[in-house]
Length: 220
Image 1 (tube, rainbow, N blue to C red):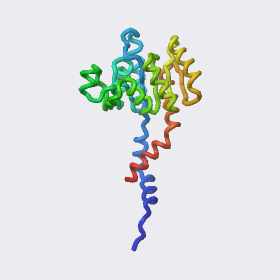
Image 2: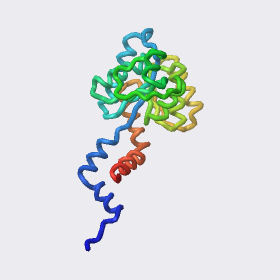
Image 3: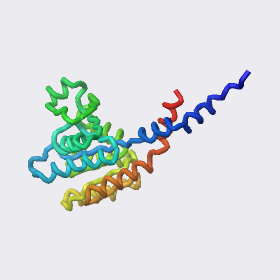
Image 4: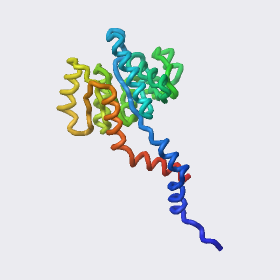
């Protein structure tokens, strides 16, 4: 009677197969949150273009974009990612689509999936900052600062587009004094550099968790 392979050997055989290799290569996608002001009208065309380009870059680097489902920076980043063929996950403060659109009056365009947290704006901000593998911020309004500091405390890589403004300098000073080494915070003026460096940090921080998740799936 032939000897049965142990479960461990079966798993090892699966992991060495071409199909497993392809699955794991395709599965390891990191999530990048892009946050910023919900009001971009007063900031002009430049902020809209920056947000769209950031979204495009996240998609081009084979990462999944996460955003608050809001007008402003996040909306334009989602549009940029979708136009570049990317996948976008939105996080809503509402508990349902009806509340999202009718009570909060928020958009739904350019998102593949919307998570309805039912936790209000503060709760949704915290959920997003904790769920994403990395976070990029444009500007530093109070809600954005909340997302930045939450991500930093959670040990997530944080990238801030350094626009040379007083708020950028203030944010840098606050994080320098308070983050105490919890996370790597990057300040960059070039979008390409910001996305590439941030994803490098995210990949360095999460490979064991990602591979473990893939292995569990293959073992089922």
